[in-house]
Image (tube, rainbow, N blue to C red; front, top):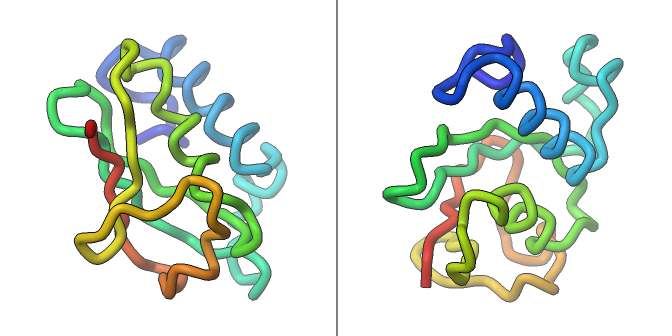
Length: 115
């Protein structure tokens, strides 16, 4: 669990990764601590990690106007030069497309995969 600081790679690395994800998706520590996810301008998504990446799935809060590429940035360090893509309902989405334009809603699960 990224928010608790416990993870596969130890507390320090997990917290560094958690901070990077929060920075990438535009969250502050205060928003996470307050559990601020009720705003209609922010959606909660579950992002499954690429198979074989050794990473845990993430629960993130994003804005519908953010681009899908923001999620790819969160996994880029573990990709080790491999190409990543976001898959929604079995279809690869354009990394430059807005999250809200793909039809996903708060609570949806999306996948980051190697291509």
